[in-house]
Amino acid sequence: MNYGWPTLPTCINVTKACGTNVTLSRGNEMGIACLSHRIRKVILLLLLGVGCCPSVPARPIHRPAKGFLLISGAAGLSRDDFGQGVLDRFVSLAGGPDANFVYIPTASSGIKLDNGFIYYPPDSDTAADNRAPFEVELARMFGVKRITVLHTRERATANRSRFVEPLRKANAVWISGGNAGRLADAYLGTLTEKEIKAVADRGGVIGGNSAGAIIQGSFIVRGRPDKPVLMAAGHDRGFAFLKNVVINPHLIAAKREDELVNVVDAHPELLGIGIDERTAILVQGDQFEVIGDSKVAIYDNQKHDNRWYYWLAPKTKFDLRTRSVVK
Image (cartoon, rainbow, N blue to C red):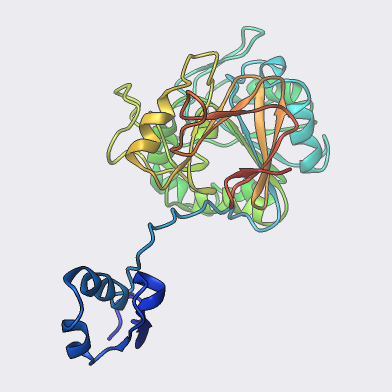
């Protein structure tokens, strides 16, 4: 019975591994015994499928089949916060101002827009009294005709078909800032998460800023709303719209340039992406483009000059599969 172990080779030419012209197969234990201890060790590793070369870390893969991810480093309290052209790109990818937009504020305990309007996402499933005017203000900020606020803190509600109906009709969804742990607590593994992803799978766009950016990776930072720690065991799983990726927003504005060095050192399979305010990455397939006004940092657990990261300027394209800049 095979439990997922690799199929072992039946024959190995030791010349390739050790420079010794001996061909061995399973069952030829006497031949193995005649070789030096070091060569025997190499052969046994090869027979077990381990090999002599260091393992290559898993590559991140963009999962939505057709659509886009727009991942923003902004605070997201005014149109200007997002950077030049970022929200225009989001609306255009959705199909224009007449498309169906959904806004998820669950990461936040309270949202204050630049015009002074305040919305508190309720802790119960009773809609806030000012939800309708909040939707009007959001539509104004995004430059669209209408937008639907979708929010719960109850996982049972997040699994109800009636609750996710706006997502099934949506061309675009935006996930607000706040704390990514609140998003994971409410939606991770639920029907709501599935339907958010489905928006992109059918050709739409998923956007998010701050916590709404963090949650789109497979590993999340600051996943505990009650404790400001960078890495919180048991509170570190994201929606994994980008697999093997960790995202850190507000990078330069909040002086967070070195934070993902620690995360990627502890989890070397991850690719770290730091995004400054007024900046975003637009992901399609296995590539993204830097858009907006500032820059993005890449953390690949390798040293670049005197830093453990390097910078990408606006309009730069990056290949997530090869982890390299597209020339």
